[in-house]
Amino acid sequence: MDALSTVLEATRLRSVVYNKFPFAAPWGLDVVKDENSQFWRLVSGSCTVGSPDGRIIELAEGDLVFVPHGSAHWIADKSTSLRMPSPEFVKARRAGIEVFKGNGDVTILIAGHFEFAYQPLHPFLKDLPPIIHIKQYVTENQLLLKQVAELMLEELNNERPGSGVMLKCLSEIMFVSIIRAYLEQAVPDHGFLSALNDARISKALKLIQDSPQNDWTLESLSSEIGMSRSVFFNQFKKLLRETPLSYLTNWRIGQAQKLLLTDNSNISEIAANVGYQSEAAFNRIFKSKTGQTPAVYRRTHLLS
Image (cartoon, rainbow, N blue to C red; front, top):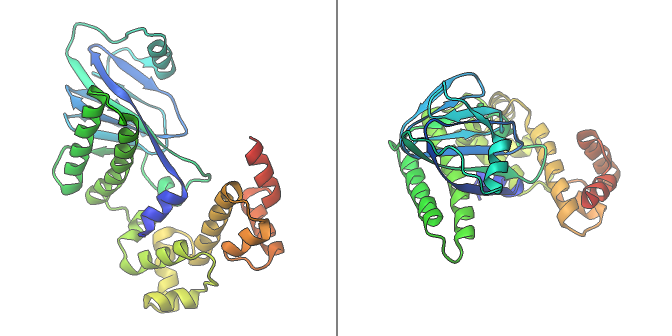
């Protein structure tokens, strides 16, 4: 499995499609900060988005905006329109109250969010910008986004047996397509996603993620990918802003967090599964990264 797929499986990507929203102008929403990544896809009409970094983005039909960190932002038919706080909008919809039913032009949007079960988030998510604007279909991945969005709209318009599962799967495909399209239009100069474009560093990430239980060293990793120890170290650190062994430790602890909550194995077995033959060493490193011992982490999170 490739490095990005392994990360998405490890963080347990989940997705929710809210609905199709027909809004008649004037309309506007102030979207409050949320712990989940959000997306808006413009099906028809036009609208404006106020980015978390202060930019104003005009969307054309087929455009999509992705807010990776769930930052506060706004979306409206135009920047001067009055905006309703998103919690009030959700409350009104749940009460069956229709809003944004004016006499102006109608805009149709599909919206939803992506969530990740395990914290802290993987560095690739933290490295993403405050907002990603994917413009309408120029590249293959943008065309895939169009096709996915059209299938979503079909399921929302015509609910059939299994529509909920279809929407969930389609939105997960949408997430990967967004990341691919982002890499096509703005390759970052550092971070996990930039490392994926370096064949040998990407291979090192795959080795670490696929086999955290191995006794990896700088020498063994660099040998596996065909680089000298020093060149590998410097290139890895340049791209990911951390050393190979630091990434290895963080990955091991992230995997241990998952296993503690999903696997009935005892702590010494989990320690071995993620590369620690000494339970005492595992306890010490786990606590330094999470603030809790493995036993306390398992107990408190299973009870919460």
